[in-house]
Image (cartoon, rainbow, N blue to C red; front, side):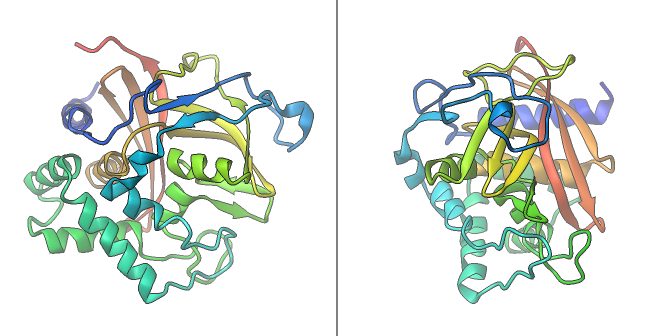
Length: 283
């Protein structure tokens, strides 16, 4: 492991240890992995290895916490199809700021901010830091094949988008997955596993999976489960600002993880998500 990854791993471990709003598997939520998803991209019944939803229980009282409440208010602010320009209303801008105001007060985000200031990658002033976060996550840009601003890092990663109505892109957030599944818009098809990846575990916080959303298919997605919005925001912002590479390996808790983080014009997050490499025994 290279030195910068070791340093980043130590910060991520500290953020993990201070993610006070994280849910406990088996207590605050339960999932049902069922079968291994098929390899086919087609949205057909023969490819479905899970007859039941992924989530069997979530304690929705958690969603009343400030950062969860502010996060969930953002999920219905977007037009899912790429190519459709986004119209951002003043109310939506206010919701974005309310979310950033909430998360920068959390222990997880304060740790990330302190580290970024020490590395001279972020301003120390909270207002200026919030402006930087807004630019990275919420400023609109034109995704491939579009001439008009139709996407943002936040929409792609946390809300999900569709391309051509048939392919789901982005969509790496468990809260959105749970809400959309509850509404009947998600059909969980089973977990994904490769020759090199460990078997998934219902009591761990990372899962690769296949699902359909609306009329589109996500052949393979990877998400954290049960973590807080501020944990993901802190981790992905750190990865984006500290690593010039688009893949960085970190070790924390039970996990060896590769964080994939694609930049868009070096100014915005194009996409970012975790890839579980192996489980480990914490020191």
